Amino acid sequence: MKVLVVMAHSRRDSLTGQIADAVAAGLADAGHEAEIADLYGEGFDPLVTPPDEPDWEREDKVYAESTQAEIARLQRNDGIILVFPIWWWSFPAIMKGWIDRVWNKDVAYGANTLNHKRALAIGLSASDAAQYAKRGYDTAIETQIVTGIFDFCGIPDGRLEYLHGSTDGGERAVEMIGEARELGKHFADGL
Ligand SMILES: Cc1cc2nc3c(=O)[nH]c(=O)nc-3n(C[C@H](O)[C@H](O)[C@H](O)COP(=O)(O)O)c2cc1C
Image (cartoon, rainbow, N blue to C red; front, side):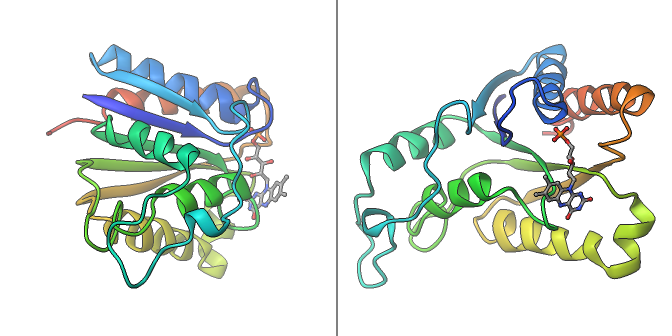
């Protein structure tokens, strides 16, 4: 299976970057092919401008060239994994902009939806699971990503995994990298 691993962090050697690499290594362990999209490293522009605004009256809008290249990269993979630090209970802006521009009308929703069989979002979080549950952030973020994006865009099997304790360092960081490798290894189980 070909899987696009999209990461959002300004430092390639951040914990987020190491988690993306571990997920890719886990995919390779299981015989899959991972393609890493490093949004910051590639200088992705997250701003939606008129060439990428949906046309609500037509179904054949041709988006900006850079968006078409991103759509092609998305579509040449059968699975997708998003790796990001949780910032203000959501994606970093660069990843939100990648969704805004690339998962566009009549590509990901509307006249066409995505063909990916499975999607996984991996959110690194400083706070622990109890803090997330206390204010309902756990289900709020899950609804936004899994229902509002994956499900809405036709991906039948989407889920969100939190890696809590991302600022604890030391042992916890090593543990998280191990957990990420397992997530990659088992990503396509049953498909
Ligand atoms: C702008 C910003 C907003 C953040 N918001 C949250 C948050 O809402 N919830 C949370 O648990 N952690 C939050 N954090 C902590 C990050 O999730 C944490 O720094 C990151 O997961 C650590 O991974 P890294 O070393 O790869 O950056 C925030 C960090 C930053 C810089």
